[in-house]
View 1 (tube, rainbow, N blue to C red):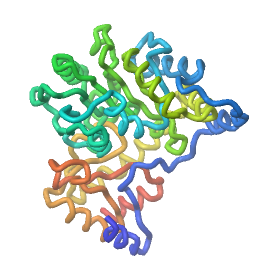
View 2 (cartoon, rainbow, N blue to C red):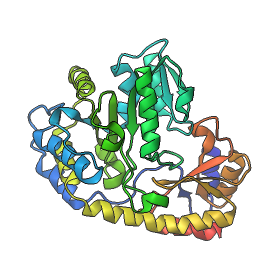
View 3 (tube, one colour):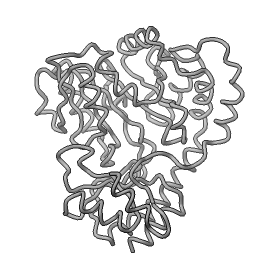
View 4 (cartoon, one colour):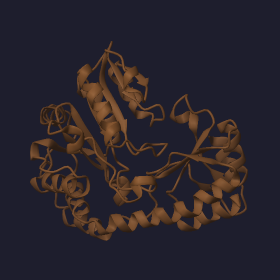
Length: 353
């Protein structure tokens, strides 16, 4: 990407970098205040999370995700979600001969995590394709990079097949608050822990969530996992011994963020406004937007090779992410993030027009 970034930086009005989904808006004041108030952190933090944090996670799942009555032994804070994604196969004891399934359009860490454990990553969206040696299935809804959402039927189909195989299902749901099109314009994006999916049985199921996107806490490394209490206990024991303890001030900040819905709605409106400016400009440029019904990205293709599209955008001072970075199945797609300031999004739209 370096040559394309250099081209984009030569634009008279500067680069518009839409290649990485790193938040640019301020961390909410109530979260920063909670962090500041907890800086007398002389004791070791609790790997399991403080009682207040565990309660806040369970309450958030009930209020925002339609997942009621999670117990304190069914939730666990993590140091961001990426480390959990990368280490989960190893923590579950996977190794040679085991298969880890991940989406065809996927964040690279799913495959990297399988490789760390010595397992085999396989990209597949069709449960009928999953082999008997499958031990972990990663779902990602809404998806990165493609913004695709799995509805209750899609989640249920994946869970049923995984249970036939004796595999764990881990659902990465960190964009769940950002629904845009179709039913997700009004309905909540469902979780793998939704009672309509689990039918009261969470064995073998984990939901992963991050506050990086909804609350601009990427720099805090604030995330959590919930689900099967036996799996949570296994992860807790390993993480205790490995020293994977979210810092106490961050845990306090997470409690504040999880308890306030207003800042989440305000942030969503910012992204909605940017999306409403950028999408029609990209379509006028010639990009056909695929999926992208939720999440932080627009995923599309001009029909040409992705690198040609990347080059054409770079000539306009716009940096995008190439589809091949997210799997070999998408040689013609590019990904553009909504995580740029209003001014930079408008600059991109002007150049595309």
